[in-house]
Image (cartoon, rainbow over all chains, first blue to last red; front, top):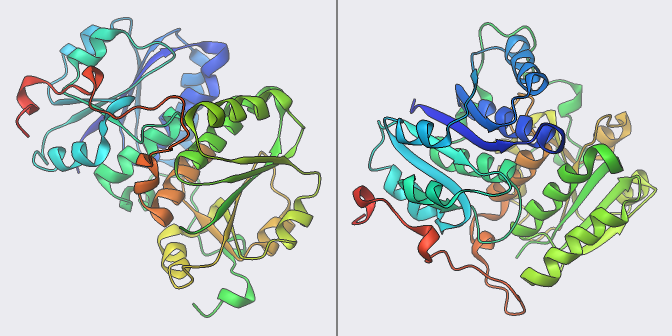
Length: 178
Length: 178
């Protein structure tokens, strides 16, 4: 499968803790194995991600950086920046499908994205031209690029797993026969 | 287009403010026009959503309720509950496509979902069997059900809009000709 690294910019410990961990866990659920963030170093947020990985299986490296420019410039692959000011993501996906083997660095902005990020990125792409959420944008972009199979990946080393056929996955009478 | 109402359970003013508003704005960006939430009433969160609607256009009703059971039982259409314990969402989408005209109530859980929500829902569905985010789950489910066109809807009454062809939507030299 194509390698995707997620790079979350400008994390703020108090204000962003849940948003950043939601971004990281969303990326993990869709097949990302390497998470990098800049901004305030946040050991609690890092630990919460590592705890999920240790219980639910697989591997995801968690890394903090002080150099946004260093990570983006040093990446060997295609840099895609998610921003509401970007192009229609359907065009981006079509372009990326022409390069199926290239690793992707997916850059997800924080409150203020430096202008040079737009210039250093190979592709600036929007998940719609409306304000919504970096968590949803990450999820939808990765689903478009990598498909839905990673969401149902079976991790052999998982301590916890769900197979979606338990009592909580029930259907009402009306839909039982579908 | 199919009508979808989003129902967010058990909002907590301090802890969930950003997560709940991200859920609401994600739903709006994908075509939802009615947002209901239970839990703590939060005028600031409501106002932040109304501010986005007033500037970016369209309409989305924002409603608080004290009765989860009342909203679910009283809904005239299909009730879909997003939960990591649900069935594979691809089966859910296939079933819903057999009922293209029925309104959907999409129920998005909070920290502890009462058992009766699973029983009252017509379909309990997962966006993957891994822990991630109610924001990403909302976005991916709506994208699967309604497609990507709503993300690029042009609101005639918008005070602000983006067309994604500005300088920030630039591509690097390598991808300019694609």
